[in-house]
Length: 274
Image (cartoon, rainbow, N blue to C red; front, side):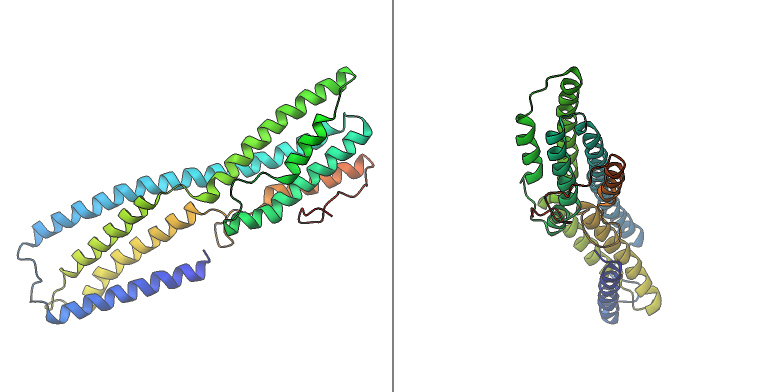
């Protein structure tokens, strides 16, 4: 989520909550609705503690998913670069085909596939260039010890790359189930309503506004943070970007120039087949 939109949401929700508090304050009795303030504060402490514990657990869960997606993207990029190096030990026709497929795989991850993750439309589809690499690899018949070693290494790297890809796309779907969101918003609403009963016509309006505003603004900001962690692939602040794969593409280009390979890849800059 864009930081400006997030700030506007926090300000708007806080302003509405303060307005509701001041509206209730007009008809509230002097001293508030609670005759026993200590008992009311104790009940509020139970509500706030329960909400904080639940929110802390869910934030930890969402951050774990966020970090797993980030680490998966980093590992996938490193493995693609390693596979390009391994592909050079195959016979020249196979090496060129595998190298072109890996370059297109990296471009698609940093291009169309990343855009689909941000839009939430990637689903469970495989990377088409990953399938193309597998079909190419099935045609390889190692004849020398070097080719056999490269074949084994390439297969192991392929499995590691797919595992890293799964970690990356796991965070795109979000890990927080709908019931947890319902409970969080329900608890937030209960706390808001309970805060309204602290309205006191004998207290200054600025104090009453501060009382409500601080609680609501913190809860709103935490819920927005939770939403951002649960959806790591977005264009706003804190969203994951394909910087690791873009860096890998630059490294691959440099390595191929050193190796004297200037054959164009069978795809455009975004990973679409030519």
